[in-house]
Image 1: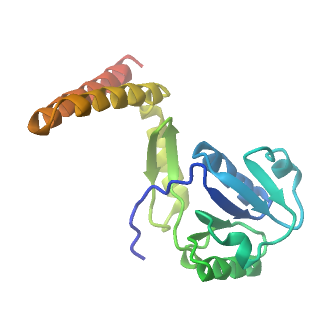
Image 2: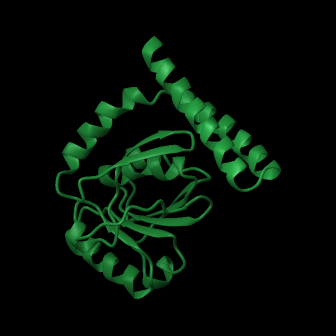
Length: 195
């Protein structure tokens, strides 16, 4: 398969998560961080998932039908029953929605990457579904390189970039932005040397 890396904007958009088990629970944190509105579909609710239900995560006490999936940004099939996951993949495709079947890349339109998130800085590591455990180990090795200060660092850079873009045009603007990019990288490298 030829995967093309993209960032899917699920902020304030609806995602259907099918399954209320451990595998589904593992998807909640990343979806929450991205600002998704999450509907968890299953016939029962496991205790760990029950603690996640709130204004952002809703429980729907049945398996979804096609109209339950229409208009979603994404469907994630994480049910314990492989036949349910296969049926959900078919339903999602029938209504034109991207689907990820957990641990089944051949059944999926997209795969999830192992990610580092520091505010708006998101770094994804993927092995194109060849070795997901290795992708996680690579992510863990990279995590110490990107401290929590990246959230603030990126916010400050964005503000500066917007000021430059509003005031200067053409080559001058590009040159000023490159200077600010270099400052951000140097500040990060200096923090690593100190840290």
